[in-house]
Length: 257
Length: 229
Ligand code: HEM
Ligand code: FES
Image (cartoon, rainbow over all chains, first blue to last red; front, side, top):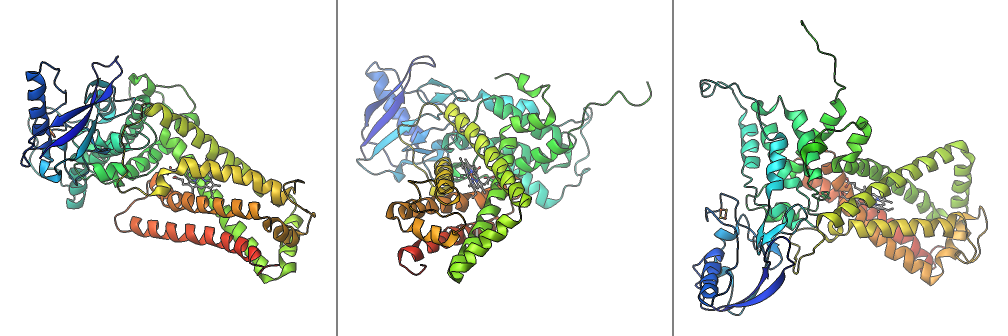
């Protein structure tokens, strides 16, 4: 099949970009979307032009590196699918395909389809950790965890941090991502000691990064390649409320001393 | 963009409100109060169908509560002010969070109502101001023939103006949208979500929004059709 691509080209973070039209001839329906771009890029390189820059690593939907908007929908809009897992059989001969990077102040475009997602790293660093005793490995199963809780934690932990939730959200909010990270640890006993602080710190860091405010629209859930439900956002909201309510003024040093 | 935001000397109430989650919570609680007002307001006005005298009596009874009425009005005003202030702040954040729009963006599963909260809200605000000038203060030029205390007659005359009727009908559909999304969103905002109950809450929210807007629309349509005279 032959496609017409409209791709966002941007030299670097400081230079304004624009949409550029490319022909993608002889696209094989068994290719993934990224392989299709690889072929287009080979053509560009042969013509002495700059290839289209996009992020990728595993190409099996588990690392979270890839992702951009395809025809106005994050990752192209196929259920639980990243662009590396999206196959060209979903397209038809003659299709026009619009390809754009994620757009958010917190995700500056570095080049073409690549955005800087280190805002996510800073949110995780602000509270996405647990305290453990170091030393010898603990006994397996020493800490019983209710099946339902471990399932909910695992579902939230499936987040690969690709950023599609922010990209899809009309508010450019990072509530699904932050909610997933908070909810993941909130369901586990290991996550309890820092649970309150975590929700306060991660929400505040999310705000400091200039993500927008969630208005429960649900586009994030619909385009999340890991199918993470907005229930995790409610879970974050609940933790934030409880933690705010219970936040205490610092006390003088207690105990013997 | 530093972690400096994590350390702050603000009072804890302000610190709470400073976060988007704090503003959202304020919007949910004040939204709930305004929603309560819409219910009571409609129930009061539906008495228009019980004959001309009823609504006037109801108006008189309300005024007779004296100070209580002013407490309620003050409370509502505070709620509206908080709701609108938070909405404006979050709207400004929305603009800041994505200054460059997509060349192409297609919504998938979200409702029209959910995507237009920042439109339906301001429309309702404009309507409230107009509505107060129309039926509460009876500003000449806005109401054709306002008589203090003649609630029923004022309502019939006011809604018989075609332009006014159109405005009422249009805004009620925006109120429908605002509540269609707002009523369930409220629960999510304060942390209440459950795979079993949330779908029911959404259905109930839709039903309640339709009933509330529909009730108000029924009054307007009945006046237009001459059922209420
Ligand atoms: C007057 C101007 C108004 C503006 C600008 C406004 C704006 C908004 C916005 C932006 C939201 C947030 C949506 C979300 O988080 O999902 C919201 C929520 C809400 N609004 Fe309004 N609104 C207004 C008036 C009203 C009125 C008069 C009512 C009552 C009938 C109302 C009831 C609600 C409710 C129940 C919510 C849900 C709260 C939540 O999402 O947590 N609003 N409003
Ligand atoms: S490249 Fe790893 S998820 Fe797509």
